[in-house]
Length: 330
Ligand code: GDP
Figure 1 (cartoon, rainbow, N blue to C red):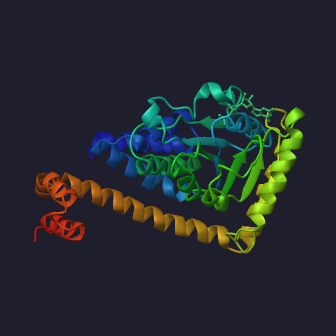
Figure 2 (cartoon, rainbow, N blue to C red; figure 1 turned 180 degrees about the vertical axis):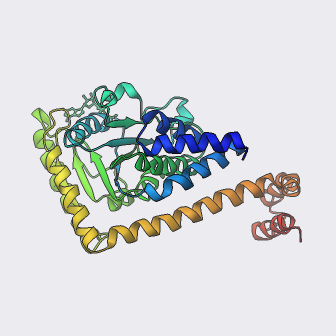
Figure 3 (cartoon, rainbow, N blue to C red; figure 1 turned 90 degrees about the vertical axis):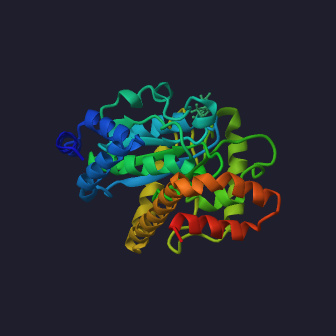
């Protein structure tokens, strides 16, 4: 890293650690960059920030488009900043790559929260694989913590594997649902239900209230049949009306009970340690794969090898072994 870059990072870190929002935004832009010199600077920035991270509660939120995520985050965020908390909202939107524009983190979605000096809303980084987006979001999360944000909301629409990705970087995972017609449990993947620490039924108001209560009953029944993730927490089902800010305080209380119960048992700290190790492995996998693909010898052989495997001229295992030999120079 050049002297100039080192000075830039030093200045950025000093400001960021004082809670300067513009420095935080610039820091996140840096960790989102894939340029090699930026990666070095981002790493240096993260090193400086690391001792000041980890003090927030990390809340993962998932829900399909239309369930009311932005309405909920607006209402929840305002309740929290009203209590003196500093709230960061980080979206993981793997679909932004395909649609070309991001839906999550769009600042027009949370009009009031976006103007709140104690809230920080980051639009979804666009481009790249879910793994790449996840890495950048994890790093952004560390920076927001270092900047003094004590509640981090990580939001996803739940496309593909993104719920798992969010659950793997959160302390608690909220599954947001809205009452629909008919069989409520249809369409919710069992794996996603298993991730939920709290199932939140939104739109429990007006005409939708009876359907919300019915849905809540069905989800309670379904959760009883699942093996809980923790010995110290049984997943709950809560009803809210985000638009009328009803039930949001009860939900925050439930998050508090969850935190207390699992912290007392040492589970939350253990979960974070395991998440860190898993993160290291995923970084390792990503960078090994990147280097493998960038290797000249491998690149020269890759296409024909794939063709050979496709045509069943070489067994896949043998092909992999040969490519590895080329990569390792054996
Ligand atoms: P998102 O796509 O998950 O972010 O959902 P939005 O927050 O944009 O909300 C989708 C629609 O549901 C909007 O028309 C909201 O006004 C409506 N909505 C959100 N929360 C509630 C609620 O608590 N009750 C009712 N009745 N409608 C809601």
